[in-house]
Image 1 (tube, rainbow, N blue to C red):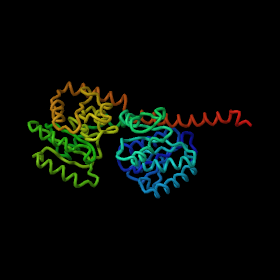
Image 2: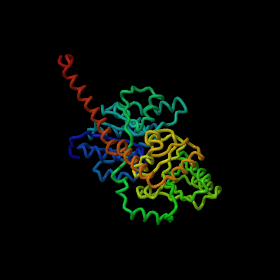
Image 3: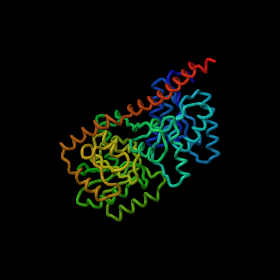
Image 4: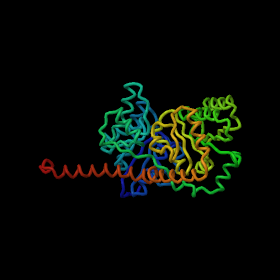
Amino acid sequence: MAKRNGPVVLQVLPSLQTGGAERGCVDIAVAVMEAGGTAFVASSGGDMVRDLDRAGARHFKMPVHSKNPLRMWLNSRRLIKIIREFDVQIVHARSRAPAWSCRAACLKTGAHFITTFHGTYNINSGLKRRYNAIMTKGARVIAISRFIADHIKAEYKIDPARLRIIHRGIDIEQLEPAAVPAARIVSLAEQWRLPDDIPVILMPGRLTRWKGQSVLIEALAALRELKVRCLFVGDDQGRTGYRQELMGLVKSRGLESIVHFVGHCNDMAAAYMLADVVISASTDPEGFGRVMAEGQALGKPVIAADHGASNELIIHGETGWLVPPGDPLALAAALRVVLALNTNQREELAEKAISHVREKFTRAQMCKSTLDVYEEILSESVSTATALEESPASAT
C-alpha cells in the first residue's frame, strides 16, 4: 500500500451490516482517505464492506464481535500485527468487546486509543459497569450526543477534558427534497399500493421492542376518526415472534386496513417524501436518533419520544413535536395536530427543519470534527516527543 500523507487510522467495530455506528464508520473511513490518510477497518464483515472497497479503504475480517475472553485476546494479537505492519497511528474502537482488544493492542504498540460511545449500555452490576468502562479509557472519548456525554460523566469516572461531543451526521446531498425525483416517489407509492388522497404515517426502524412500534399502533387505535395509512419500514432481523405479536395487536385493534409492515426499503429518501409525518416512538432513550434527523432533512414533521437525544434533534413546536415516551394517547394527540396542519404551516415547518439539520447534523460536520480529534491526538504526540528531545534529561 502506497504511503499517504494523512493519518493512518484503524476503526474497529463488531460488524458492518447495518446501523448508525456502522454508517458512521464508513463515513469516517472515506473522510480519512479524502484527507490523504489511510483507512483500515476491522469487523466480522457485512454488506457495508463494499462501501469501504469503493473508497479504497482496507477491511480486515475478524471476530471482534466476540465476548469470549480467549477470542478477545487472540483478536488483540492480530490487531498488534496490523498496527505494526501498517504503521497505524490511531485505533478507534466503536463498541465494548472490540475496545478491550484494541486497548490491549495499543498498550503493546504505542498506537493512540480512542473510542466512540454510541449508547448508554446496561449497568446492572459492578462487573457490567467495569466491562462498559473500557469505552471511557480512550485518549479521547467521543459521545454521539450531549445526552450520551452527560450519561458518561454521571456514571463513569472520566476527565471531562478527554470528552468530545460529535453528533452523528447524515448525507444531506442525498436527503433533501430536490434530490428525490418524483418518479422514485411514485414508484414506491405504487409498490406499497398507497392511495393518493390519504395521509401517510411513517415509522422507520428495525422491528425490535424498544423502538416502540406497539405505542404507535395503540395511538392509531385512538384515531379511528382519521383516514390514514401507517407504514412500518424495517426488517425484523429474525425477530419473527415480535413481528407476529405486532401483527396480532394490529388485528385485535381492527387496524388491518390501516397498518402495513413493508419490510426493508432501499430508497428511504423516497419513503420519507411519501410521508405526511415521521414517527420515532422509542421506549428506551435514543443515543442519537438518525430517523429524526433524516425526516427533518426532507422537510417532514417528526414526532418523537421526549427522552435521550430527542430534544437535541427536534425543536418542539417548530421542527417537530416531542411527546412523553410510551404514551399512546399523547402520541395520538400530536398526530391530530400534525395531520391538521395546512399547506403554509407545513412549508414553514419544512423550511425550519431543513435549516436545523443543515446547521447541526451533517455528515461533513461529523467527519471534520472527527478528523480534528485525530489531528489533536497526533499533534499532542508530536509536542510531547519534541519536549522530551529538548529537555535537559534527554541531552545528557
